[in-house]
Image 1 (cartoon, rainbow, N blue to C red):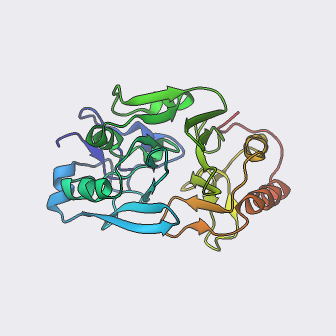
Image 2: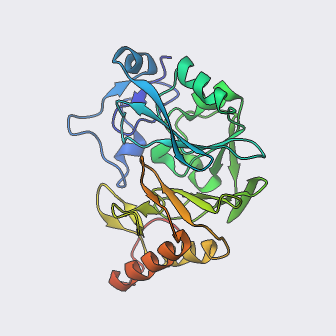
Image 3: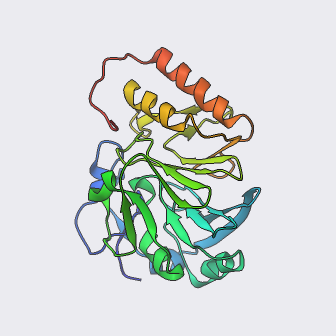
Length: 270
């Protein structure tokens, strides 16, 4: 319970340190009052509690009230082949574990990118579940553990009809998850669902407004082309494209590329 957690990004580290490399990277930021730390015990004492609510057919949102750090919620995919926890939150306690167990537990965990690593090892140990992370993001692991499974290449099926795709947007290892039977794509903010919930966008850094490279967006679009999906689940509560998700991604990429200068300046992805 004493593992340090960065207050700004919510990622749990293996040992105390003066800095948070994830926040010092140009895609994130150090809190305006400087680097500060918390722990799970402190969050519990401050009154944080788990939140579990339906987010879609066969999909439950798992989050925290009040929200911590970036404020994202995870998603529990209740698949016949075993539940998958997509993305991650910082908070966990016995009551939240019980509520997730009541929904069938967690057979596997997959996380889109380092900003959402949260307390992933706590969750992995609570459910004896592997955590799938793309090998390109290996250097960002803040709390190394045997539960983390690094995979390489462009796609990996982690269960029947559940496929990780290394879109490479935002981080080189940035991944999304396609659920064939639900016709759904789980994108975190690798593909950021816009506030109108009809479009998505692609950024190297959201808080610092650094656009993603056009060739990286094109690669992501190519990798997603074979997959059919109606819904796109973003990283925050109700940030969901509800219909024609695949069309929304294509239209959004076309719009993004029409505004972008295709000069291949340095950035994330391939």
